[in-house]
Figure: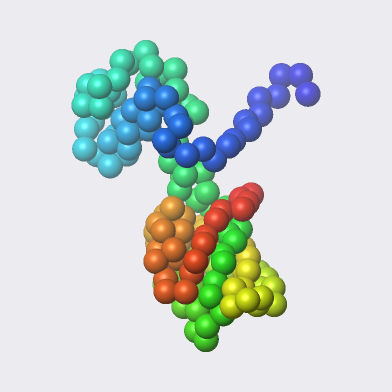
Amino acid sequence: MVGKKTHDFLIVSKNILPEAILKTAQAKELLVKGEVYTINDAVERVGLSRSAYYKYKDGVFPFYEASRERIITISLTLENKAGVLSHVLNFIASVKGNVLTINQGIPLQGIANVSVSLETAGMVDTPENLLSGLGEIDGVRKIELIGQS
């Protein structure tokens, strides 16, 4: 379509991004948190030029901002022990995530693969912290974001 602006997004690990993009994200976070009040103060604090900030500011935002009010799907590899899936679901409920679907395969060799789709709109924490917290549950061997809409 001619004239229609579209955005394609990628989830990229921070450790492969150029320094200017990382510093732009840091400057934006300082502004959002109210730690600084002007863009000039933010870029000065993180050591970034104003021109670099303006170049990247509309294309850089934290993962949780991109997935707020969205549906995310996560894949979990769980040990086949009583209560592990229950702990996962209780943790999601504790941050007010709204579970939409749960798919669990038959456990093989003591491991169960589970995918959970959930709505993030009402969550009291960021999806980033949700994933981190799920990874700390005993019996959760692996967690991976596999989709968002």
